[in-house]
Amino acid sequence: MYPISDEARRSVLNEAERLRLLSPTERDLIRLVHEPGYARWLDQIKSIGGCAHPIYLAGHTTTRDAVTGEVLRHYDTSGEPGGRMPVRCRNRRETRCEPCSYLHAGDTFQLVRSGLLGGKGVTDGVRRHPRLFVTLTAPSFGPVHRALDGGVCRPRRDGGVCEHGRPVGCGQRHEETDPVVGQPLCRDCYDYAGHVLWHASAGRLWNRYCHMLRRHLATAAGITQTRLREHLTLSFAKVAEYQKRGAVHFHAVIRLDGPDGPSSPPPQWATTDLLSDAVRSAAAQVEVRTPYSPATGERVIQWGKQLDVHPIRSDAFTESAVTDSAVAAYVAKYVSKSVGDSGGIDYRIQDFDSIRLAPVNTHLRALMATCWRLGSLPELEALNLRAWAHTLGYRGHVLTKSRQYSTTYGVLRAVRADYQGGGVLALEDRETVTESAWRYVGSGHSPAEADIAYGIAEDLATQREIRREMIAEGWKYAA
Image 1 (cartoon, rainbow, N blue to C red):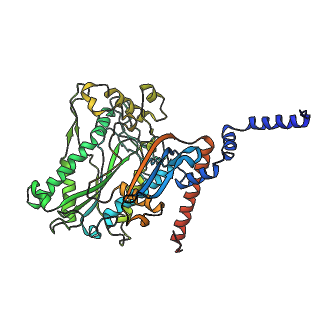
Image 2: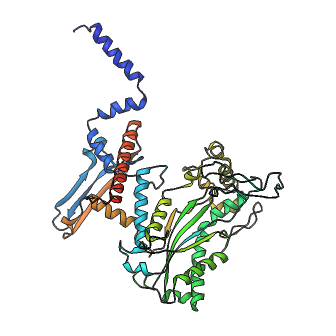
Image 3: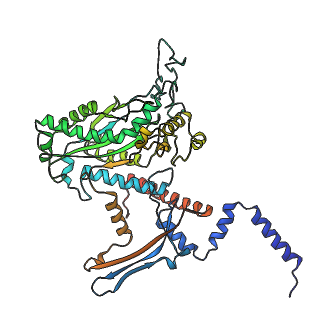
């Protein structure tokens, strides 16, 4: 056995000391790059766009000829690093996974735009159908601070205070980034119970509104509501957005089609003006009621007074801000947002202490606490307020659409997967059978993996920005 020299001993000690001085992420990076499957893992993370929280699956899939039994395609994760394969988390929230939210926003853009211009299985004739971009808001639950493009927040010439001794006006000029924007002038005057119950009932209010809108269209046409379907169909796509005050409002694309859907034109009497009048009158009349509770009474849920209705113009009308592509981009922008972008949180509340310690302002904390308090009442149990305390009581999907409005997310994802997989042209003339077996084996990144995935996502975002600049400058290139 050879003796260890003092120099070699010092070298080992120095290396151990250097490793000890490294951060946990740096030590994890050294481990990662020395893994035998590192290069393949890097390719996998690039293929999912640097997803911030990938889902790892293990298994196999085999495609055979249904007649001969010949194996046409086979994939097995046993040869992959760790025996697993990462797939996108598909989280739409930008605050949780920016790469996947970008992809989801792109799908939303195509989904909404195809319902305005055609394509993706929708006929081009829809661009000549009556189409409106409508914004429906929540009512006021109490005055809040506002940012008004340099104007005074809430001017009150005669001053005055509320019953709790607080000023009923505000003479300040707030910027959009001012943390006071959206906060109540008096928290004791603010109707927190009404705010939460409106959120819990907003989905029912929208459904009732669609029924009311059909009724008003039938009345305007001089026919019964039961016969309206013989003349036209109502199609829509809507997205929910949180305001600074923590209240949801809806942006909706509403379109009139013929009796056979997008492929048929609506009758001549179904004009944009008639649709606009029906949208306004139905919004003013529709209402739903909450279950009665001794603590809250029976609340009447209605839309707020602010209602915006704009005809959607063709992209050729550059002087108009409400064009086909502009509306699609606007909806796609908000589909990746959540209550977290208004200062809230993106995870479920498990107990009341979590509300007390949540990193939110006092106004949103009061709304969450109201959800928790009202959620304990037996008569309001059906509203499931505690489960949705993190969304301030709102439990609807961020984007919903009628069945015939346009294509679906599933179809868009299937087309993209087929394109990325090289297509199925070689198999289209053969009857095939596919056998698959997959199981969940993990999720997320280690610290070093998260840093590398973030760098990949950042590089891809930079490349997209460069492409946009080249297009703006008139360059032509292959995508």
